[in-house]
Length: 163
Image (cartoon, rainbow, N blue to C red; front, side):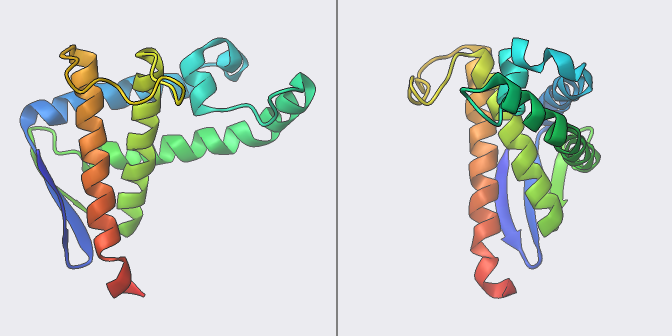
């Protein structure tokens, strides 16, 4: 991957064909998580992480909060996912994002990292993953971290010029 860099009013990165394919597969998996029945959210740790409870100690308040917020949250995540999917070059190539698209990428890469990190057992309590863990899933997690980090750096680098 060529990291994201600020280019005028856009941030630009380069993805290989393999990176585009991996990102496409991850987006498809996230899309499936967003499409599933909302009633199953608390039972699935990944979905519970993507749609956190509004209250930890009162199940009724948490359920009411979920009833009020989950639909809009799900729609927002689905909209971001669709935008990211539309901007990923199918066979690799440049990704060119305006600020709104960059924000959608940041939110979606965050969701992808939350989902994968939860499946890998990564929590705030366990600390960061071992960078020497060579498993395929851990490698993808580290790659997503690098994508998100370079996007944050590029996005923030232009913040002063746009105000």
